[in-house]
Every structure is written in structure tokens, then in C-alpha cells.
Image (tube, rainbow, N blue to C red; front, side, top):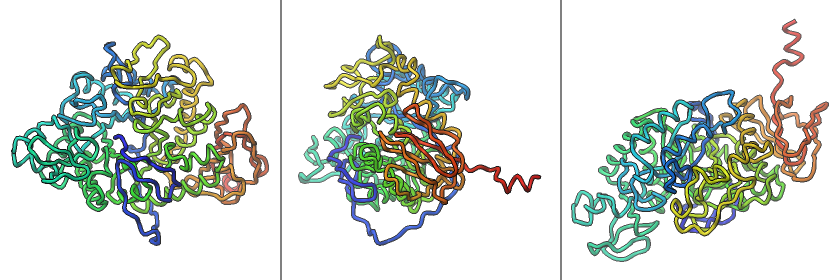
Length: 536
């Protein structure tokens, strides 16, 4: 959901600026937490791909993205065949709202159990789910439970004086900030826009409606939900927000224990941290996204501060697991509310380095559609949601004036359309494919806890994943670095590397030489000399 306030630059564990989805209270930094790992259902770990449904793929050539268009392009995400060389190899799909709505973006819902006709029919959706499951793709739906549309029948009945539905919303007899004047002479809470009246989430009847909605879609075969505007559920009251999020998480888990929930708290590290005790699976890692110029990944990419990156990523991993031992981080570069990563990063090499950095972080990374092409977009929201370019002819691509009316930019990419980049072995798209195939060899990248290894080489991040794996990044875009591996590094043998240049890393007599802008994966050698002697 669109942020209302400017998110200022911050470091990961320092205070971020306030933004749309949370107004954070300060926390007592003197209280030290201890992260405790607990086993998490491994089926919840996936590489996700976000689509703005209107702009992804147009099957009937009416200019609007639709459900059948998504279905027709599922093989682009994952063919379901392990030996396929053509797909991205993502296993999760987040679809922005597909429900009945009067707006182009769909975050003001008139009916949560009906498909927006511009996207197709319920039969089209059921087919999409069936085809996604065949390919091992879990679909999660975007749920704006913070507010409805003014056209929603609940709000219309409230305006007509039906006491049951009056209690579904928050009212005031006098004008105040965040409230809009209704036709009944009263003011209703509408923090985002006057077309989006906020629900009274403390009302048990509203909770029943929400539980009914989540069960409806889980029964349709969806694998979970992205929760919009979590930080605004109870503005300025983190305790109530956390309590409601816990209720919602518990409700969905009772309906389907394997359902996955990821929430949006577009705010400070502290505010995000406050919500993790709810037990929600994931909260988006906004402090490490590109929209904050001083985020760890930005500092690493732009300033070459790899060592600091390692320290901050470990600290965040420890922090969220102290609040929720089963937490699954959700890193991303950009999304439908932020300037696109290709706009923020100055070169193709930097985009490639950014990709391997966040895709190899623990948890569930979220790729924003077109990010793997270097799709640009900034400024107003429509510019961040421009159509996906499938081929040079524009076939299957929605039309911007229909899918995102009011857009002021024309989409460009760093390397052309999907078809053009598929044909170029050095394209950003093929780099994304390579990264995800490397990652697939090491499930511990997603699941295991981190241990940062301090080194004197500023451009390097050296991080142990569990007991057997080490990932080393060189964030210098110009200099090869040679260092003696610290004794605390658990990986002993180079098993994979991602070098943006043609240079390759070398490990000789405990000394690692790593090229500029590259990543090395070290795995513990299980067959040590001691092991061989025992076998003999």
C-alpha cells in the first residue's frame, strides 16, 4: 500500500523515518534479547515473485493484465521440471489484489470474495491455482484488511444507519486528522484516502468476516496471504496491532497449518521488530531495501562497506529471532510502492551484485516482476507498476494507459524484453536464473542462522550459515581482494561462485583471492584427513 510519509535514510538497527504503514513507538534498547532457533516447516521457505496483476500479462489483448495471462506465463516462473534451463525457478507467487474494486490498484475492496471482472472469472482463478500447484508454485493473495472501499456494501449499510455495520468502522462526531466527512454528517477514519474507510478491527463481527474471507480463499487453494498495511491496523498502538496480528495469524494457521503469512510494516526496524512477537511468519525487510539510501545493502553496493553489511545482517537475523524464534526474513530490493531497483542502481553490474546479495540472504526473498530485466520506474505509483515487456513486439504485454492510467514514464529495461534477454547469456535475466540455481543447492541459505565473521578487509562480508556453509561477498567494484581465511570460517572448499567479471576466485593454502563484485560459497569438506584415516 502506498506510503504516506517519506521514508528517510537510516541504518538497519537505528531509527528509520516514519512511513505509511506504521507510526512507531520508541523501544528500550537497553534490553538485550537472545535469539533462539526453532524448527520451521521447510515448506514455508520459498523464493517469491511479486506481480502487479494489471501489468503482468494480457491474454485477451484488451490492454489489461488478467488471470489467464498469469497462467499462460507460469512456465516463465517455474516449469515444474527440475532440469529445465528456461525458468526462473521461483516457488512462490504474490499477486496484488484481484478482488472487486473501483480503482486501478485494487487496494480498496468492494467484495473480498469476488474476482474483479477485469481480471477474469473465478473459474480462471481456480485454473491458475491448479496450474501453479502442478509447477510447485504457492500462490499468496494480497489482503487489505485495514480498510475497505466506500462502495463496499458494509460501508453503504453503515451510511444507511444499520447499527451492525456502523460498528464495522471508526467514527467521530467532529473533524480530526485522518478522518473524512461522510454523507450521514459524521466523520469516518480514512488514514490512506477518503475512498478507503478504516475497519474497526477490534469488533468481533469484523473479525468473523475476516476469518470467513481467509477460509474462503484457502479453500480455493491459495497458500497464504500478504497482509497489507499491518502497521496501520491500530495507528499509534503497537500492542493492539500485535495482538490483532497474532489473532489473524492464529486464525489462518488453524484453517491451514501450512499457510504462509507475510506482513507489510513500511516503517522503522524498531516498528517491524515490535510486530514479530505476534508469531507471524514474515515481515518485509524494509530496513534493508533499496529505498533507504543508508540501508546495509545500499552501503555495501555504493560505498563498498561489506564488513558493515555482514555485521548488520547478522544483528537483524538475531533481533527478529529473539522476538519470534520461527521468524522467516523477507528481503527484497523494491516493490510496487518504491522506486524500482534498476532506477536506483547505476549499472548492470551493480544490479547483478544486488541480486546475488539479497537472493542469498536467509529467509524468503521477494523478486518484484521485471526486476530481473532491469525494468525502470520511479515517482508516482503508476510509474512503479509499468507493464512487463515480454517481447519486442509487445505481444502479451498490457497497455500502460489501461493497466496503470496516469503513468508518466515509459518502461525501459537494461537489456530488452524477456525474449531478448533469454537469448543473451550475459543478460540480467539469465544472471537471476543462475543465482537461483546455485541457491537451490544449499537449502541452509534460507533456513540456517547467521554468524558474521569480522575481517579487516572493508569490502568483504564473511558470513557463516549454520555449521557447514560460508558466503563471502566482495562489494568492491574494481579491486580483487586476497585474505587469509579466519579460523572461524566454517566453509573450507569453494563449491560455487558468482563472479560478474570473467575472473574466478581461488583458495590456496588457506588464502582466498576473490574478484571484484563477486560471491563465493564455501562448504565444509566432510572428508577430512581424520575421517579418511578412520575409514582406512
